[in-house]
Length: 88
Length: 417
Image 1: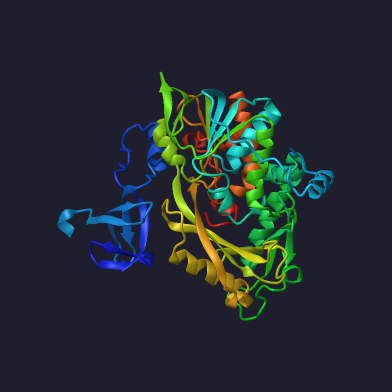
Image 2: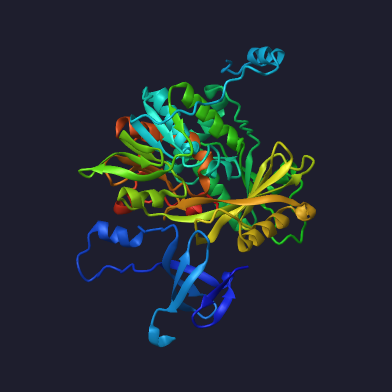
Protein backbone atom coordinates (compact mmCIF):
# COMPACT_ATOMS: atom_id res chain seq x y z
CA UNK A 1 0.00 0.00 0.00
CA UNK A 2 1.02 3.58 -0.58
CA UNK A 3 1.47 5.87 2.40
CA UNK A 4 0.14 9.43 2.50
CA UNK A 5 1.52 12.06 4.91
CA UNK A 6 -1.16 13.50 7.20
CA UNK A 7 0.09 16.89 8.46
CA UNK A 8 -1.03 15.86 11.95
CA UNK A 9 -0.25 12.13 12.14
CA UNK A 10 2.60 11.62 9.68
CA UNK A 11 2.81 8.78 7.15
CA UNK A 12 -0.25 6.56 7.23
CA UNK A 13 -1.80 3.86 5.01
CA UNK A 14 -3.58 5.31 1.96
CA UNK A 15 -6.79 3.52 2.95
CA UNK A 16 -7.16 5.85 5.94
CA UNK A 17 -7.63 8.85 3.65
CA UNK A 18 -10.65 10.15 1.79
CA UNK A 19 -10.65 12.56 -1.16
CA UNK A 20 -12.96 15.46 -0.32
CA UNK A 21 -12.72 17.68 -3.39
CA UNK A 22 -10.66 20.13 -5.36
CA UNK A 23 -9.11 23.01 -3.45
CA UNK A 24 -10.16 26.58 -4.14
CA UNK A 25 -13.88 26.03 -4.61
CA UNK A 26 -15.78 28.71 -2.73
CA UNK A 27 -19.40 28.18 -1.81
CA UNK A 28 -21.54 30.97 -3.26
CA UNK A 29 -23.04 33.38 -0.70
CA UNK A 30 -26.50 31.90 -0.21
CA UNK A 31 -27.82 35.01 1.52
CA UNK A 32 -27.76 36.67 -1.91
CA UNK A 33 -29.38 35.81 -5.23
CA UNK A 34 -27.35 33.09 -7.02
CA UNK A 35 -27.71 32.20 -10.68
CA UNK A 36 -28.38 28.57 -11.63
CA UNK A 37 -25.12 28.61 -13.58
CA UNK A 38 -23.06 29.70 -10.56
CA UNK A 39 -24.70 27.16 -8.28
CA UNK A 40 -24.21 24.41 -10.88
CA UNK A 41 -20.55 25.37 -11.30
CA UNK A 42 -20.04 25.15 -7.55
CA UNK A 43 -21.91 21.88 -7.07
CA UNK A 44 -20.78 19.88 -10.07
CA UNK A 45 -18.09 21.36 -12.27
CA UNK A 46 -14.41 20.70 -11.63
CA UNK A 47 -10.99 21.00 -13.23
CA UNK A 48 -10.15 17.29 -12.93
CA UNK A 49 -6.53 18.11 -13.71
CA UNK A 50 -4.13 15.58 -15.21
CA UNK A 51 -0.83 16.02 -13.37
CA UNK A 52 -0.29 18.15 -10.26
CA UNK A 53 -3.60 18.89 -8.55
CA UNK A 54 -4.31 20.77 -5.33
CA UNK A 55 -7.00 19.02 -3.34
CA UNK A 56 -8.73 18.81 0.02
CA UNK A 57 -8.45 15.46 1.78
CA UNK A 58 -9.56 14.11 5.13
CA UNK A 59 -7.61 11.68 7.27
CA UNK A 60 -10.54 9.60 8.48
CA UNK A 61 -8.67 8.32 11.52
CA UNK A 62 -7.97 11.75 13.04
CA UNK A 63 -10.87 13.48 11.22
CA UNK A 64 -8.70 16.42 10.17
CA UNK A 65 -9.13 18.03 6.76
CA UNK A 66 -5.98 19.23 5.01
CA UNK A 67 -4.65 20.35 1.63
CA UNK A 68 -2.67 17.94 -0.50
CA UNK A 69 -0.91 18.55 -3.79
CA UNK A 70 -0.68 15.32 -5.70
CA UNK A 71 0.27 14.18 -9.18
CA UNK A 72 -2.87 12.48 -10.50
CA UNK A 73 -0.88 10.39 -12.99
CA UNK A 74 1.94 9.06 -10.80
CA UNK A 75 -0.01 9.32 -7.50
CA UNK A 76 3.08 10.97 -6.01
CA UNK A 77 2.28 13.28 -3.09
CA UNK A 78 4.06 16.59 -3.72
CA UNK A 79 3.08 18.32 -0.46
CA UNK A 80 0.52 18.34 2.33
CA UNK A 81 -0.30 21.14 4.70
CA UNK A 82 -2.86 21.94 7.37
CA UNK A 83 -5.65 24.23 6.14
CA UNK A 84 -5.10 26.52 9.09
CA UNK A 85 -1.37 27.18 9.43
CA UNK A 86 -1.72 27.84 13.17
CA UNK A 87 -3.38 24.48 13.77
CA UNK A 88 -0.24 22.58 12.85
CA UNK B 1 -7.78 -8.06 -52.38
CA UNK B 2 -10.47 -9.75 -50.32
CA UNK B 3 -12.36 -7.38 -48.07
CA UNK B 4 -15.67 -9.13 -47.38
CA UNK B 5 -15.93 -12.00 -44.94
CA UNK B 6 -18.06 -15.00 -45.90
CA UNK B 7 -17.76 -18.78 -46.06
CA UNK B 8 -16.87 -18.42 -49.73
CA UNK B 9 -14.16 -15.79 -49.19
CA UNK B 10 -12.70 -17.88 -46.36
CA UNK B 11 -12.59 -20.94 -48.61
CA UNK B 12 -11.07 -18.99 -51.50
CA UNK B 13 -8.42 -17.40 -49.30
CA UNK B 14 -7.76 -20.75 -47.65
CA UNK B 15 -6.96 -22.28 -51.03
CA UNK B 16 -4.65 -19.33 -51.81
CA UNK B 17 -2.79 -19.67 -48.51
CA UNK B 18 -4.45 -16.57 -46.99
CA UNK B 19 -2.31 -14.26 -49.09
CA UNK B 20 -5.10 -12.02 -50.37
CA UNK B 21 -6.62 -10.51 -47.24
CA UNK B 22 -6.63 -6.71 -47.28
CA UNK B 23 -5.77 -4.66 -44.19
CA UNK B 24 -8.88 -3.88 -42.13
CA UNK B 25 -8.48 -0.14 -42.55
CA UNK B 26 -6.24 2.27 -44.44
CA UNK B 27 -3.75 4.58 -42.71
CA UNK B 28 -4.16 7.79 -44.69
CA UNK B 29 -2.39 11.08 -44.07
CA UNK B 30 -4.89 13.60 -42.73
CA UNK B 31 -6.54 15.94 -45.24
CA UNK B 32 -6.64 19.70 -44.57
CA UNK B 33 -10.39 19.83 -44.01
CA UNK B 34 -13.19 17.48 -42.99
CA UNK B 35 -16.91 17.97 -42.42
CA UNK B 36 -16.55 16.28 -39.05
CA UNK B 37 -13.47 15.46 -36.99
CA UNK B 38 -13.92 12.95 -34.18
CA UNK B 39 -11.32 13.08 -31.43
CA UNK B 40 -10.79 9.63 -29.92
CA UNK B 41 -10.54 6.36 -31.85
CA UNK B 42 -12.08 4.16 -29.20
CA UNK B 43 -15.32 2.28 -29.58
CA UNK B 44 -17.51 5.37 -29.29
CA UNK B 45 -15.46 7.44 -31.74
CA UNK B 46 -15.30 4.66 -34.35
CA UNK B 47 -18.99 3.80 -33.95
CA UNK B 48 -19.85 7.48 -34.34
CA UNK B 49 -17.90 7.65 -37.60
CA UNK B 50 -19.58 4.50 -38.89
CA UNK B 51 -23.11 5.70 -38.12
CA UNK B 52 -22.35 9.18 -39.50
CA UNK B 53 -21.55 7.54 -42.83
CA UNK B 54 -24.19 4.83 -42.75
CA UNK B 55 -27.20 6.64 -41.27
CA UNK B 56 -26.54 10.24 -42.30
CA UNK B 57 -24.42 9.99 -45.46
CA UNK B 58 -21.65 12.10 -43.88
CA UNK B 59 -18.45 10.47 -45.13
CA UNK B 60 -15.95 13.33 -45.15
CA UNK B 61 -14.96 12.41 -41.61
CA UNK B 62 -11.69 11.79 -39.77
CA UNK B 63 -11.25 9.85 -36.53
CA UNK B 64 -8.11 11.00 -34.72
CA UNK B 65 -6.52 8.66 -32.20
CA UNK B 66 -3.46 9.52 -30.13
CA UNK B 67 -2.41 5.89 -29.75
CA UNK B 68 -3.61 2.79 -31.56
CA UNK B 69 -7.10 1.36 -32.01
CA UNK B 70 -8.13 -0.75 -29.05
CA UNK B 71 -5.29 0.61 -26.90
CA UNK B 72 -7.48 2.66 -24.59
CA UNK B 73 -10.59 1.78 -22.61
CA UNK B 74 -12.04 -0.31 -25.43
CA UNK B 75 -9.26 -2.80 -24.77
CA UNK B 76 -9.27 -2.36 -20.98
CA UNK B 77 -12.71 -3.41 -19.82
CA UNK B 78 -14.54 -6.58 -18.80
CA UNK B 79 -16.64 -6.79 -22.01
CA UNK B 80 -20.02 -7.04 -20.26
CA UNK B 81 -23.06 -5.93 -22.28
CA UNK B 82 -26.34 -5.30 -20.44
CA UNK B 83 -29.20 -2.84 -19.97
CA UNK B 84 -30.28 -3.54 -16.39
CA UNK B 85 -30.86 0.07 -15.34
CA UNK B 86 -33.58 1.65 -13.26
CA UNK B 87 -34.67 4.91 -14.89
CA UNK B 88 -36.64 4.88 -18.18
CA UNK B 89 -34.13 7.24 -19.85
CA UNK B 90 -31.28 4.84 -19.04
CA UNK B 91 -33.17 1.75 -20.10
CA UNK B 92 -33.99 3.40 -23.44
CA UNK B 93 -30.32 4.29 -23.95
CA UNK B 94 -28.69 1.03 -22.91
CA UNK B 95 -31.35 -1.19 -24.45
CA UNK B 96 -30.82 0.58 -27.79
CA UNK B 97 -27.21 -0.47 -27.36
CA UNK B 98 -28.05 -4.11 -26.60
CA UNK B 99 -30.36 -4.21 -29.65
CA UNK B 100 -27.66 -2.73 -31.89
CA UNK B 101 -25.13 -5.22 -30.48
CA UNK B 102 -27.55 -8.05 -31.31
CA UNK B 103 -27.37 -7.19 -35.00
CA UNK B 104 -23.86 -5.78 -35.08
CA UNK B 105 -21.85 -8.72 -36.42
CA UNK B 106 -24.17 -8.97 -39.41
CA UNK B 107 -24.38 -5.18 -39.84
CA UNK B 108 -20.62 -4.62 -40.04
CA UNK B 109 -19.70 -8.08 -41.44
CA UNK B 110 -17.33 -8.68 -38.53
CA UNK B 111 -17.82 -11.16 -35.71
CA UNK B 112 -17.89 -9.22 -32.43
CA UNK B 113 -18.69 -12.48 -30.59
CA UNK B 114 -21.63 -11.06 -28.65
CA UNK B 115 -22.49 -14.04 -26.47
CA UNK B 116 -25.89 -13.58 -24.82
CA UNK B 117 -25.12 -15.80 -21.87
CA UNK B 118 -27.17 -13.68 -19.49
CA UNK B 119 -26.24 -11.61 -16.48
CA UNK B 120 -27.24 -12.09 -12.86
CA UNK B 121 -27.22 -9.38 -10.22
CA UNK B 122 -27.31 -11.24 -6.90
CA UNK B 123 -29.51 -10.29 -3.95
CA UNK B 124 -28.24 -11.30 -0.52
CA UNK B 125 -31.15 -10.52 1.82
CA UNK B 126 -34.94 -10.26 1.85
CA UNK B 127 -34.67 -6.48 1.63
CA UNK B 128 -32.39 -6.77 -1.43
CA UNK B 129 -34.90 -9.17 -3.00
CA UNK B 130 -37.58 -6.48 -2.67
CA UNK B 131 -35.29 -3.96 -4.36
CA UNK B 132 -34.49 -6.55 -7.03
CA UNK B 133 -38.21 -7.00 -7.73
CA UNK B 134 -38.51 -3.22 -8.06
CA UNK B 135 -35.65 -3.12 -10.57
CA UNK B 136 -37.11 -6.03 -12.55
CA UNK B 137 -40.44 -4.19 -12.75
CA UNK B 138 -38.72 -0.97 -13.84
CA UNK B 139 -36.73 -2.76 -16.53
CA UNK B 140 -39.81 -4.53 -17.87
CA UNK B 141 -41.74 -1.25 -17.96
CA UNK B 142 -38.83 0.29 -19.87
CA UNK B 143 -38.98 -2.49 -22.46
CA UNK B 144 -35.87 -4.42 -21.39
CA UNK B 145 -36.03 -8.11 -20.53
CA UNK B 146 -35.69 -9.00 -16.87
CA UNK B 147 -36.58 -11.90 -14.59
CA UNK B 148 -36.51 -12.27 -10.83
CA UNK B 149 -34.80 -15.53 -9.92
CA UNK B 150 -35.09 -17.34 -6.59
CA UNK B 151 -32.10 -18.96 -4.91
CA UNK B 152 -32.81 -22.37 -6.46
CA UNK B 153 -32.96 -20.92 -9.96
CA UNK B 154 -29.66 -19.08 -9.38
CA UNK B 155 -28.09 -22.32 -8.18
CA UNK B 156 -29.29 -24.11 -11.32
CA UNK B 157 -27.68 -21.46 -13.56
CA UNK B 158 -24.48 -21.04 -11.58
CA UNK B 159 -23.85 -23.92 -9.15
CA UNK B 160 -20.30 -22.68 -8.54
CA UNK B 161 -21.50 -19.73 -6.46
CA UNK B 162 -21.47 -19.80 -2.68
CA UNK B 163 -24.66 -21.51 -1.48
CA UNK B 164 -23.29 -22.62 1.89
CA UNK B 165 -25.52 -21.89 4.86
CA UNK B 166 -22.72 -20.03 6.62
CA UNK B 167 -21.93 -17.79 3.65
CA UNK B 168 -21.25 -14.22 4.68
CA UNK B 169 -23.53 -13.03 1.86
CA UNK B 170 -26.12 -15.78 1.39
CA UNK B 171 -27.77 -15.80 -2.05
CA UNK B 172 -31.51 -15.13 -1.86
CA UNK B 173 -32.01 -14.64 -5.59
CA UNK B 174 -31.02 -12.46 -8.51
CA UNK B 175 -32.10 -10.05 -11.21
CA UNK B 176 -31.50 -11.92 -14.46
CA UNK B 177 -31.21 -10.34 -17.88
CA UNK B 178 -31.01 -13.14 -20.43
CA UNK B 179 -30.13 -10.90 -23.37
CA UNK B 180 -27.10 -9.54 -21.52
CA UNK B 181 -23.71 -11.16 -21.91
CA UNK B 182 -20.23 -10.45 -23.15
CA UNK B 183 -18.61 -9.42 -26.42
CA UNK B 184 -15.10 -9.42 -27.85
CA UNK B 185 -13.83 -5.93 -27.06
CA UNK B 186 -11.04 -5.70 -29.66
CA UNK B 187 -13.39 -7.01 -32.33
CA UNK B 188 -15.83 -4.19 -31.60
CA UNK B 189 -13.10 -1.60 -32.22
CA UNK B 190 -11.64 -3.38 -35.24
CA UNK B 191 -15.04 -4.19 -36.73
CA UNK B 192 -16.31 -0.63 -36.50
CA UNK B 193 -12.97 0.67 -37.83
CA UNK B 194 -13.12 -1.62 -40.84
CA UNK B 195 -16.77 -0.80 -41.53
CA UNK B 196 -16.18 2.96 -41.20
CA UNK B 197 -13.08 2.77 -43.40
CA UNK B 198 -15.04 0.99 -46.12
CA UNK B 199 -17.53 3.87 -46.11
CA UNK B 200 -14.70 6.35 -46.70
CA UNK B 201 -13.87 7.49 -43.17
CA UNK B 202 -10.19 8.38 -42.56
CA UNK B 203 -8.81 6.76 -39.40
CA UNK B 204 -5.66 8.55 -38.30
CA UNK B 205 -3.68 6.78 -35.58
CA UNK B 206 -0.68 7.99 -33.58
CA UNK B 207 -1.96 11.52 -33.94
CA UNK B 208 -2.59 13.45 -30.76
CA UNK B 209 -4.84 16.48 -30.56
CA UNK B 210 -2.85 19.28 -28.91
CA UNK B 211 -5.37 22.11 -29.19
CA UNK B 212 -8.50 23.44 -30.81
CA UNK B 213 -8.59 26.08 -33.52
CA UNK B 214 -11.01 28.65 -32.13
CA UNK B 215 -11.96 31.60 -34.40
CA UNK B 216 -14.40 34.17 -33.06
CA UNK B 217 -15.43 31.85 -30.25
CA UNK B 218 -16.28 29.06 -32.69
CA UNK B 219 -14.26 25.88 -33.08
CA UNK B 220 -13.03 25.50 -36.66
CA UNK B 221 -10.74 22.51 -36.28
CA UNK B 222 -8.05 20.82 -34.25
CA UNK B 223 -4.31 21.21 -33.90
CA UNK B 224 -2.57 17.85 -33.91
CA UNK B 225 0.89 16.34 -33.87
CA UNK B 226 0.38 15.86 -37.63
CA UNK B 227 -0.62 19.47 -38.25
CA UNK B 228 -3.74 21.59 -38.34
CA UNK B 229 -6.96 19.88 -39.44
CA UNK B 230 -9.98 22.08 -40.16
CA UNK B 231 -13.46 20.77 -39.43
CA UNK B 232 -17.09 21.79 -39.83
CA UNK B 233 -17.71 20.40 -36.38
CA UNK B 234 -15.69 18.46 -33.83
CA UNK B 235 -16.93 15.54 -31.76
CA UNK B 236 -14.91 14.63 -28.68
CA UNK B 237 -15.22 11.02 -27.52
CA UNK B 238 -12.13 10.63 -25.34
CA UNK B 239 -13.22 8.54 -22.38
CA UNK B 240 -11.31 9.26 -19.21
CA UNK B 241 -9.45 12.23 -20.64
CA UNK B 242 -12.46 14.40 -21.49
CA UNK B 243 -11.46 17.03 -18.92
CA UNK B 244 -8.01 17.34 -20.53
CA UNK B 245 -9.64 18.08 -23.90
CA UNK B 246 -12.13 20.44 -22.22
CA UNK B 247 -9.27 22.54 -20.89
CA UNK B 248 -7.88 22.90 -24.43
CA UNK B 249 -11.31 23.67 -25.87
CA UNK B 250 -12.26 26.31 -23.32
CA UNK B 251 -15.24 24.49 -21.79
CA UNK B 252 -15.74 22.80 -18.44
CA UNK B 253 -17.17 19.43 -17.54
CA UNK B 254 -18.69 18.02 -14.35
CA UNK B 255 -16.40 14.99 -14.37
CA UNK B 256 -13.92 13.21 -12.16
CA UNK B 257 -11.53 10.64 -13.65
CA UNK B 258 -10.88 7.39 -11.85
CA UNK B 259 -8.98 4.20 -12.54
CA UNK B 260 -11.23 1.18 -12.98
CA UNK B 261 -9.42 -2.11 -12.51
CA UNK B 262 -9.99 -5.50 -14.04
CA UNK B 263 -8.34 -8.88 -13.75
CA UNK B 264 -8.06 -12.08 -15.74
CA UNK B 265 -7.12 -15.48 -14.37
CA UNK B 266 -5.33 -18.38 -15.98
CA UNK B 267 -7.57 -20.40 -18.29
CA UNK B 268 -9.56 -23.12 -16.55
CA UNK B 269 -12.18 -25.65 -17.64
CA UNK B 270 -15.75 -24.41 -18.20
CA UNK B 271 -16.75 -23.00 -14.82
CA UNK B 272 -19.70 -20.69 -15.30
CA UNK B 273 -21.68 -19.76 -18.41
CA UNK B 274 -23.24 -16.50 -17.28
CA UNK B 275 -22.11 -13.17 -15.80
CA UNK B 276 -22.47 -12.98 -12.01
CA UNK B 277 -22.37 -9.70 -10.13
CA UNK B 278 -22.66 -9.17 -6.40
CA UNK B 279 -23.35 -5.55 -5.42
CA UNK B 280 -22.63 -6.44 -1.78
CA UNK B 281 -19.07 -7.59 -2.44
CA UNK B 282 -18.59 -5.10 -5.27
CA UNK B 283 -17.27 -7.76 -7.63
CA UNK B 284 -18.37 -9.55 -10.75
CA UNK B 285 -16.96 -12.14 -13.11
CA UNK B 286 -17.60 -14.11 -16.26
CA UNK B 287 -15.62 -16.72 -18.15
CA UNK B 288 -14.06 -15.75 -21.44
CA UNK B 289 -14.20 -17.98 -24.50
CA UNK B 290 -10.52 -18.80 -23.88
CA UNK B 291 -11.30 -20.04 -20.35
CA UNK B 292 -9.89 -17.22 -18.24
CA UNK B 293 -12.18 -15.65 -15.70
CA UNK B 294 -12.62 -11.94 -16.36
CA UNK B 295 -13.07 -10.13 -13.05
CA UNK B 296 -14.18 -6.59 -12.39
CA UNK B 297 -15.22 -4.39 -9.51
CA UNK B 298 -15.97 -0.84 -8.52
CA UNK B 299 -14.15 2.40 -9.10
CA UNK B 300 -11.04 3.40 -7.22
CA UNK B 301 -11.64 5.55 -4.15
CA UNK B 302 -9.32 8.27 -5.39
CA UNK B 303 -9.48 10.26 -8.67
CA UNK B 304 -6.49 9.56 -10.89
CA UNK B 305 -5.19 9.21 -14.44
CA UNK B 306 -2.73 6.41 -13.61
CA UNK B 307 -3.59 3.55 -15.99
CA UNK B 308 -2.51 0.75 -13.70
CA UNK B 309 -3.87 -1.36 -10.89
CA UNK B 310 -3.37 -0.70 -7.21
CA UNK B 311 -3.51 -2.71 -4.02
CA UNK B 312 -6.52 -1.40 -2.03
CA UNK B 313 -9.04 -2.06 -4.80
CA UNK B 314 -7.35 -5.31 -5.76
CA UNK B 315 -7.93 -6.63 -2.23
CA UNK B 316 -11.57 -5.55 -2.21
CA UNK B 317 -12.44 -7.04 -5.58
CA UNK B 318 -10.61 -10.34 -5.15
CA UNK B 319 -11.93 -10.84 -1.62
CA UNK B 320 -15.40 -10.33 -3.06
CA UNK B 321 -14.81 -12.88 -5.83
CA UNK B 322 -13.63 -15.51 -3.35
CA UNK B 323 -16.69 -14.81 -1.22
CA UNK B 324 -18.94 -15.29 -4.28
CA UNK B 325 -17.18 -18.40 -5.55
CA UNK B 326 -14.84 -19.90 -2.92
CA UNK B 327 -13.61 -22.51 -5.43
CA UNK B 328 -11.66 -19.72 -7.14
CA UNK B 329 -9.36 -19.11 -4.17
CA UNK B 330 -6.53 -21.15 -5.69
CA UNK B 331 -6.90 -19.92 -9.26
CA UNK B 332 -3.98 -17.74 -10.32
CA UNK B 333 -4.29 -14.29 -11.76
CA UNK B 334 -2.73 -13.90 -15.19
CA UNK B 335 -2.69 -10.10 -15.21
CA UNK B 336 -4.55 -7.06 -14.08
CA UNK B 337 -4.89 -3.58 -15.51
CA UNK B 338 -6.80 -0.33 -15.22
CA UNK B 339 -8.52 2.03 -17.61
CA UNK B 340 -9.38 5.63 -16.82
CA UNK B 341 -13.08 6.40 -16.74
CA UNK B 342 -14.74 9.78 -16.36
CA UNK B 343 -17.61 9.81 -13.92
CA UNK B 344 -20.37 12.41 -13.79
CA UNK B 345 -22.20 13.48 -10.61
CA UNK B 346 -25.28 11.40 -11.48
CA UNK B 347 -23.29 8.49 -12.97
CA UNK B 348 -24.99 8.99 -16.33
CA UNK B 349 -23.19 9.98 -19.56
CA UNK B 350 -22.97 13.42 -21.11
CA UNK B 351 -23.99 13.73 -24.76
CA UNK B 352 -24.49 17.18 -26.23
CA UNK B 353 -22.94 20.55 -27.05
CA UNK B 354 -19.81 21.25 -25.02
CA UNK B 355 -20.36 24.93 -24.34
CA UNK B 356 -17.84 25.98 -27.00
CA UNK B 357 -19.64 26.36 -30.31
CA UNK B 358 -18.64 23.72 -32.83
CA UNK B 359 -17.51 21.16 -30.25
CA UNK B 360 -19.80 18.34 -29.17
CA UNK B 361 -19.08 15.86 -26.39
CA UNK B 362 -19.75 12.19 -25.76
CA UNK B 363 -18.26 11.33 -22.35
CA UNK B 364 -18.94 10.54 -18.72
CA UNK B 365 -19.85 6.90 -19.35
CA UNK B 366 -18.14 5.98 -16.10
CA UNK B 367 -17.82 2.25 -15.60
CA UNK B 368 -20.15 1.40 -18.49
CA UNK B 369 -18.69 2.71 -21.72
CA UNK B 370 -18.14 -0.60 -23.50
CA UNK B 371 -21.72 -1.84 -23.36
CA UNK B 372 -22.88 1.54 -24.66
CA UNK B 373 -20.61 1.74 -27.72
CA UNK B 374 -23.24 1.15 -30.44
CA UNK B 375 -25.82 3.47 -28.84
CA UNK B 376 -23.21 6.11 -28.00
CA UNK B 377 -22.02 6.12 -31.60
CA UNK B 378 -25.54 6.02 -33.03
CA UNK B 379 -26.77 8.96 -30.93
CA UNK B 380 -23.57 11.02 -31.21
CA UNK B 381 -23.67 10.63 -35.01
CA UNK B 382 -27.25 11.90 -34.96
CA UNK B 383 -26.17 14.90 -32.89
CA UNK B 384 -23.18 15.71 -35.11
CA UNK B 385 -25.14 15.29 -38.36
CA UNK B 386 -28.19 17.32 -37.29
CA UNK B 387 -26.82 19.61 -34.59
CA UNK B 388 -29.80 18.46 -32.53
CA UNK B 389 -30.50 15.63 -30.11
CA UNK B 390 -32.10 12.28 -30.86
CA UNK B 391 -35.02 11.72 -28.43
CA UNK B 392 -33.00 9.06 -26.57
CA UNK B 393 -29.92 11.28 -26.04
CA UNK B 394 -31.81 14.46 -25.09
CA UNK B 395 -32.14 13.60 -21.36
CA UNK B 396 -28.34 13.14 -21.24
CA UNK B 397 -27.57 16.69 -22.35
CA UNK B 398 -25.09 18.38 -19.95
CA UNK B 399 -27.76 21.07 -19.42
CA UNK B 400 -29.42 18.72 -16.94
CA UNK B 401 -27.03 19.92 -14.25
CA UNK B 402 -28.44 23.43 -14.63
CA UNK B 403 -32.08 22.38 -14.64
CA UNK B 404 -31.76 19.68 -12.01
CA UNK B 405 -33.16 16.88 -14.20
CA UNK B 406 -30.50 14.42 -13.06
CA UNK B 407 -30.65 10.75 -13.99
CA UNK B 408 -29.17 9.41 -10.81
CA UNK B 409 -28.08 5.91 -11.74
CA UNK B 410 -25.53 5.60 -8.93
CA UNK B 411 -28.02 3.38 -7.15
CA UNK B 412 -30.28 2.44 -10.04
CA UNK B 413 -27.67 0.64 -12.10
CA UNK B 414 -26.68 -1.55 -9.17
CA UNK B 415 -22.97 -1.09 -9.83
CA UNK B 416 -20.58 0.90 -7.70
CA UNK B 417 -20.01 4.12 -9.59
